[in-house]
Length: 261
Image (cartoon, rainbow, N blue to C red; front, side, top):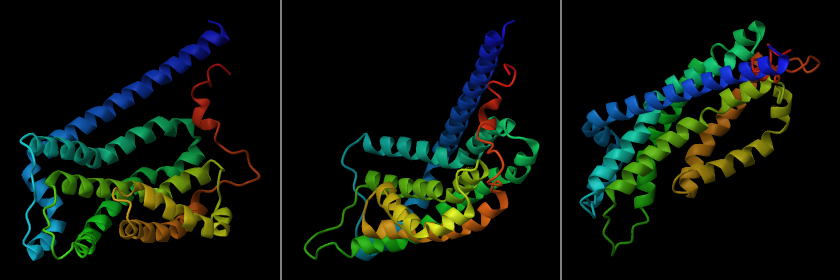
């Protein structure tokens, strides 16, 4: 077999592995969604609890405007909840695909990246859930005296789920920076020297990624993520590569061409 044929076969093999991991990730998502579907009553109570204090205070109830709406709420909520539930398993699939492209000495300090990613995601979800009651109270304070609060159940539940997911994803910042440091793209000195620009960037991303795009939600996200940025600088010191040594970026893709070389 020629070198070109070997390269082509090697690439095909790893593309097949990527496809298999993507399929498994989709299966994990479906399993999580089905689990959320059977626990929907508890899930709905969990998602609406941060709003109940405001609704009780205002003497308000959720509003449904059509017959299909309850089904669509359950379907959309369970899909997003399934993604949150299976996120650690999807992270494991990503790590399983990437790690063989790293050398053993590079893999060792990163072996705890996966559990750290799962922990940070859960921390983001918990922080968001604890802050949400204050957020809804802040929103309700702007209801005019001559208006009656009748929030849409669909919009309210999806807002909560999207906020939880957004916080979980943004809290992965330390993991992203550690991976970038390991491949030689950033280092702790660079991150510390550019912290002011990073704060501006975090504020912009927080304003974009929060579902309501309001100032309060942005601050809810920007303040803890800004703290995570400085924690990330300490974590980056543990994994950053020597700037004089060749960076390992190419090794992430070397598994696609190793036999050809």
